[in-house]
Length: 252
Image 1 (cartoon, one colour):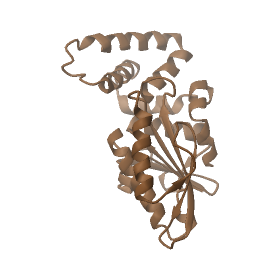
Image 2: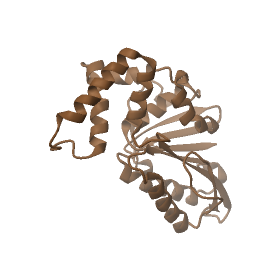
Image 3: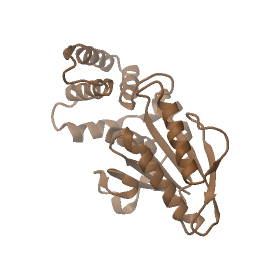
Image 4: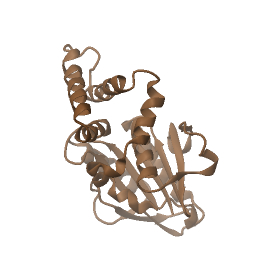
């Protein structure tokens, strides 16, 4: 079985990557096992990706470099499925993980994905819903019928926000001291740029809160230490994470 997870940014990719490794037992493919840096690749329009395996199953996790590029990458995955010469080449599971930046995020994705389904003559059962698998069928280059599933995970499920917010909330619930620091960081970001000269979008504030916290937590060699912190988080102990990513257990 082949699966692909389409993420919005590098933080999302790293978060999902370490979760899949620690909780679901996926491992980097042998040729990448000693290379922890994100792999540049043009596959599906990804800026970076990592390839994993477990038994005979394969998983690619890639980031598109922004929400506006997610649908383009999704199109490319569907096109690859349509061009496949055998069912073994088909991506059986296509997962989109993105932030709930705005209240209408799901509706917008629903419209864009429906357009993709129409363009590629894809038949699907039911309507696209958050956290619900959508079964799809179409034909490949040999006019054989192929089947695959699509899953949209807009995180957090119940509130407007981003994966960074989701992660900070999870860290706050596990440690009172971190909770205090995160609270102070959030207050600072909310009030520092009172004229909105620089943090012109709510998305920028979300990213700033995440970066300010990690600037305090890891003031030196930030990227490498931050990466180790994310790798070292006991994801299996975070109930919110477990619930939100529970369907990813079905990939292998």
